[in-house]
Length: 153
Image (cartoon, rainbow, N blue to C red; front, side, top):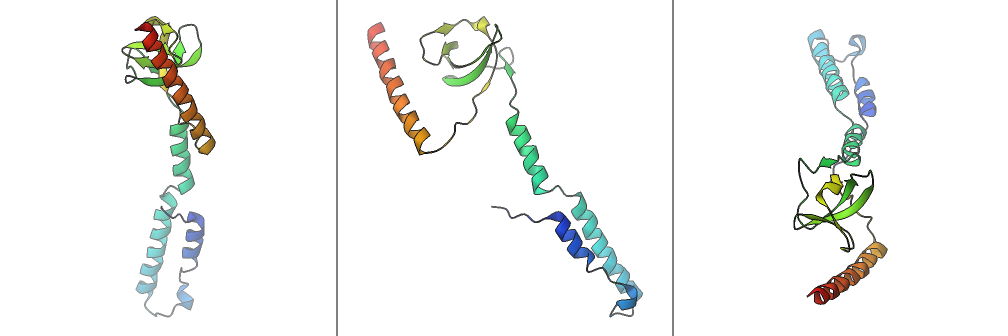
């Protein structure tokens, strides 16, 4: 994992090393000028670099603003659950499979024209309770699907 430093703290620290020509150990003014120029250059470069907070804010901003995708531009991958914007201005989670839109419980087929836009679902919360719940729900949904297949079958 990357370690971060505070830019302003480093710049303040560098400024302490700027040499006052009257207090310099060296008698050569060129040496003092070159050293001070090096400090000034380092401060200039540091001042232009983005801070970790700025980079993190950009990353969060990009990830937190998902974009709606028109069904005319692109469809989700098969067997993918997505958020869908419906023609009647409703947002719901649905599944795209075999070129068709279905309600999550697979009890309702939705006509193609019902869905105008979609976006990927956000990542679910993590933790033991959520994972146990997902395992339980997944098992129930699988049992219902198998029962429906045998009934239709």
